[in-house]
Image 1 (cartoon, one colour):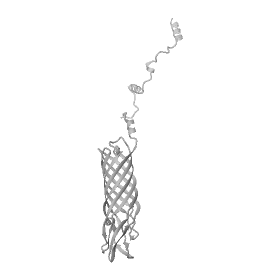
Image 2: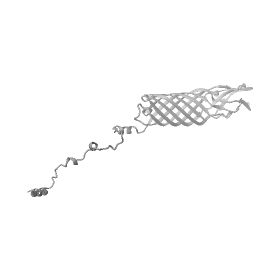
Image 3: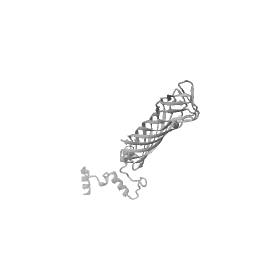
Image 4: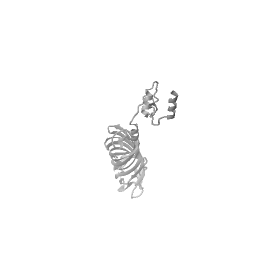
Length: 286
C-alpha cells in the first residue's frame, strides 16, 4: 500500500500553482535588515553614532554653487597724500628763462584738498546657497567672486607758496578710475556682514591749469599737470546690513595711483598719489 502511494505521487509530479514557502519569498531591504538585526550576535557594520539624514540629498542640491549679481553705488570722501615732488621744481614763464618754484618737498595734500567721489560697482559672486538667509550676497555665510567698478573723484585745488614770495593756485583735479578684481563676503547672521575687495586697473587724470605769481614776473596762467593715463590699485573693506535684496554698506579703503605727468612747461618729479577713502553705499542683489 505504501509503495503504491509513492508511485502515484511520483507520477503526479509537483503542482505548478503551489505557492513557494514563506521563507523563500524575497524581502525588502529594510525588512531584511531588520531581520538580520533581530538575529542573536548581529553586529552593525555602520560606524558608531551613524544616523541617516533624509534631507542630505536636498542639502547637496542646495549647496551647488550659483552665480549671483549685485549692483551698487557708493558715495566717497577721499583724502590725497604722498609726495608730489621730492626735488627742486621749475616752471617756464612767458618772458623766457626758468623761474624757481620750490626748493622743498611738495605733497599732494599741499596742492589738493580732500574731495568727493562716486563709484558704480557690479559684482558677480560665486555663492554657497542653502547655508544662510536673505537675498543677493546674503545667501551664503562665505562667498567670493569678481567685480568691475567705475569711479570719479574731484579734488579741490589749493594755493601753494614756497616761502620766498613765489606762489601758484591750481584748478580742481578730476580723475576717473576703472578697476577689476576680486571680492569676498562673510555673513555675520541676522542680516549683518563683512566684505572686502581688491582691484587693479587704470586711472585717467584730466589736465590741470594753474595761476602763477612769481617775484619780478607778471602773473600768468598755464598748465600744471598734463592729461594722463596710468595704473591704479585699490583695497577696501567694510561692514553692511541687508534688508531682503537691499543692503547698506560702510567702508574704509585705500588707493595707490601712479601719478599724472607734469605739463610740458613744468619740471616736477611727481610721486605716487595715495588716497584714504571713506565710503557709504547701497546695493541690490539678484
